[in-house]
Image 1 (cartoon, rainbow, N blue to C red):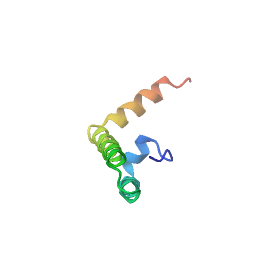
Image 2: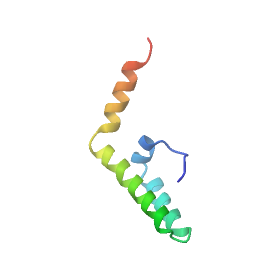
Image 3: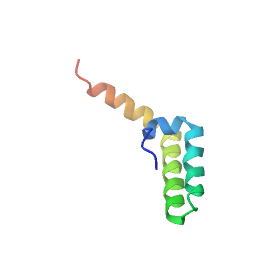
Image 4: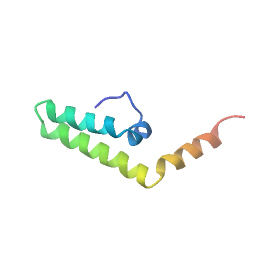
Length: 66
């Protein structure tokens, strides 16, 4: 998988999600890699849907020194 985007950025980028899935299938469609990519994209989308990234961002902002 590509490390170009953070999970938070990936959650907002549908094109990047599709690109990861498409690339996994294009590389001979190895079952393990495809499963890993699908699982990761699903997890990222679930975290976004539940509002976890907003919560994490709010906590991170509170931890920054003033």
